[in-house]
Length: 139
Image (cartoon, rainbow, N blue to C red; front, side, top):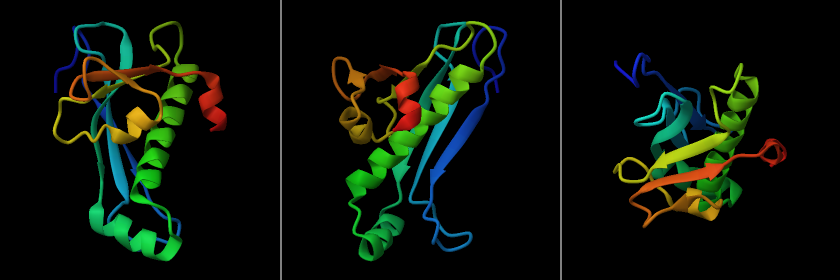
């Protein structure tokens, strides 16, 4: 489908799965990223889907004890690391080390991003953002 001016729109899905999960079972959480900031010709990842799977998280919590909030923060962290590596591997200055979060979309849960220091103005239903640094690679 169409993206920014002269750009094709494509997306990447990031899934959070337990190493002991059921083969073919539901992921604990999913994030989807598109790559063109609205109204810009500069590449910039935009999270357009971020949701945790309630039943899979409940089953994982029973076996591991990790809270749903901690699992969501882990998925947000892995998304940041992916975007930092993407920016580091981009040739030239066509990709900024910034991650945007489409908080106005109903399929985007923003709480985990707020917990990791993303800024949403004027509220969590807006476009959130965070400049990513190489330190995110070691998180």
